[in-house]
Length: 250
Image 1 (cartoon, rainbow, N blue to C red):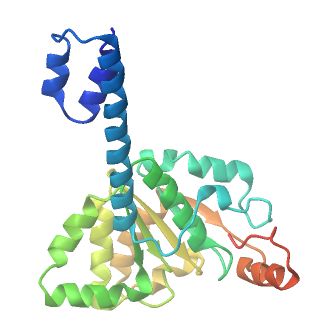
Image 2 (image 1 turned 90 degrees about the horizontal axis):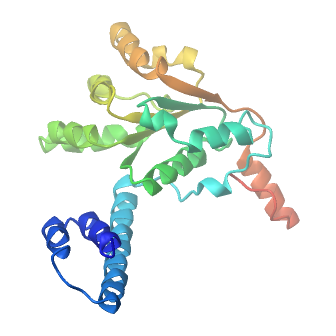
């Protein structure tokens, strides 16, 4: 029992051979204590490096923290609903989140805050801004790396698709969106932000059959958050002009 905490730390570090050998070693209590401190320091160091890698991989559009989200302003997102989203049950169940609302209402910040919560729970995240996706896909196509790109994203736990419908995706690349969603069936989740109401999404795709398939996979397994009200950016600018720091832009 004396070695149990150290045994767990060694196993956590992937040193299972050392963990198995530990029980056979006659270690003094002070040695056990010192070893426990060293192993805990190594665990924390590795966790920190892994967190940094997840943040770098995500390429989030902006820094955001769940605790900084304004749930006081009336915009269709109260405290209980935000806490529900932060539970990440939707992510565990491979469901999606659709954040719909006018410009400046805070959709991007909310998406990135949820992404940060997922990263803190050791989930992989990748942020894609759809208006610029065509440029990225054109480069990948020229390099013959589209297949690799799809395979890589297929392993990501959470994808963020920012600004759906702001700029139509090239017709030649629209089928790739279906492949992205198909790869996530029962394996991963998507957060979509859009200024367009869902009833207008179908018209963003040239092929009606393709549109039906994309919306079927995206909308019917999603939690819809419809945000309304005044632009949070305008409120933030107004608060900054008046010197009031209590009016957040998130």
